[in-house]
Image (cartoon, rainbow, N blue to C red):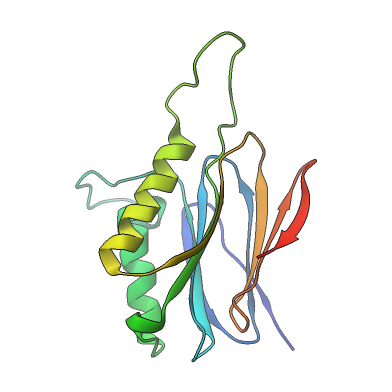
Length: 160
C-alpha cells in the first residue's frame, strides 16, 4: 500500500516505491522530480527561487541550486546511481500580469532556467518540462513508475 508524502513550499522529500510524492500550489515555483527507475527511488523539491546567491543561512530547499544539491545527496544516500537518474518538472508560471504592461520579474521563467542549469551541471536528462503559462499546478510523482500527474485549474489533468 502506498503512502502519499506531501512536499511543502521550499521543501523536498525522498521516497521509494510504492510511495507517491505530492506538492500543491505551484505557481511561479518549480516542482522538480528526480527518479532512479532501476531502484524505484526518487525525490521531489518545491523550489521558490533560482539561486541562493551565496546565502548559507535559512532554508536551502528554497533555491534551485541548493535544493538540487540536497535532493541529489539524499537520493544517492538511498543507493541511487547518478547515471540512471531522470528528471521531470512542472510549474514556473507567470501568475500575475497587468494589461498593457510587460511581465515583471519573470520569476517562473528564471526558476525553470535555474533548474535546467542544475540538471545539466549534474548530467541528469530532463524528460518532461510542463512549465510556463499563467495557471497553477498540483503534481503527484510516483517513484515506482516515474509517472508525473499534473493537475491544473481550468486546464485539466495529464500524466507524463
